[in-house]
Image 1 (cartoon, protein in one colour):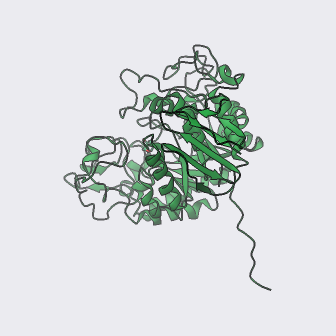
Image 2 (tube, helix red, strand yellow):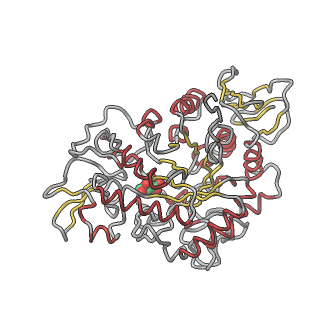
Image 3 (cartoon, protein in one colour):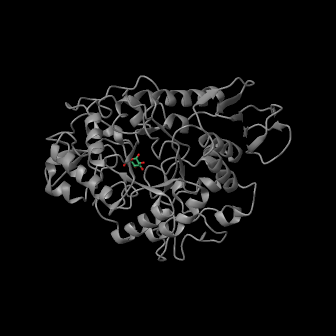
Length: 482
Ligand code: GLC
């Protein structure tokens, strides 16, 4: 008998739409003004109705909330604000019942300073004896070292001082995180988003980062951007750390978050299935930049697309309403998993930051509560929301549900169509300042120019972002033809 030619089975996530839930802002169920897991359970219907395949939940673990939950003080429990482990199990069961997979966030690089590990296992962290170990700058600005008066030593924190970095060279750290992954796997989760994956590998000698010689690839804190981060992150040892998580995760889906250009993905891919394509998220709105961002990511062969998340201004704020619609069309026609951040499907805009801002790095804007109903509390809560609603009267799920030209209708249509979209991306010739590619029998067309674009004759228009039916596509709009 010859060799078996059975093709490898396509994994569930290969072209999945994964809906990002920021639990604090999704749905409150008990009137305390904070979203919670029973609220998530209640709203899974919406996610399913939208047509998504999975949800990713940002951290819901116990946390002092110095970084919106990305400062975890217990990896194997639920913060009482969000409910209990039983609520998590109920949510997971319900998700699976309605056909949604569940991905959780794995904040592997650092714990909260209030995690008992920091007290009981100081050798699981990175220390410097008498002076700050080097010139590294924290991602949100300021030195990456803070003094711990109890121990009389300096500890490393790649993010806020309340988030001490774990030392992934210590096998006990690897074993502990292995246990965390097993804990959630055993409860039935389908995947993990590995937070700050690039930080898991640091220069073993903690050498200084050299000065930057070029502007950063993406927007960064001004002080942080003065250095090139060749030593503080992305050390090749990162692969062993990720492999350890893969070993614990089995065949679960692993998506890595590293704030790096696509050219660096190879350091992460292998143990991790896909990396977030931040180059596309931040690409300037022109043909060259968008096409380059897509090509570079596709070349690396393991990419997850996103046009928005809880860390960046929302698409409608960054791009404006028409381009946000066109960006949605692009996002949902690219091959590979696509992430949709809650609220993007109704074109939510950034809200005002709290005064004083709750997030010191200025990310309140994209974290305002989800707007379900056109009423002042948006159907999010009956209490006092932790961050005010922004414009629920203008923008809400219920307000858009009956409108065939709404952003919601567009998202739903695009997600449904995506199921029929097969094959790799092939670029097509198109007029200047327009972008065109083929996916199987579908042709995608984006007009980025300031002039109307004549639609090619002889093709049926399956979706168009402008909601019109003329023979031309206006500037800042897109269409799918078949
Ligand atoms: C990731 C998260 C962000 C968090 C940071 C530190 O970038 O998306 O919200 O502040 O990691 O955990």
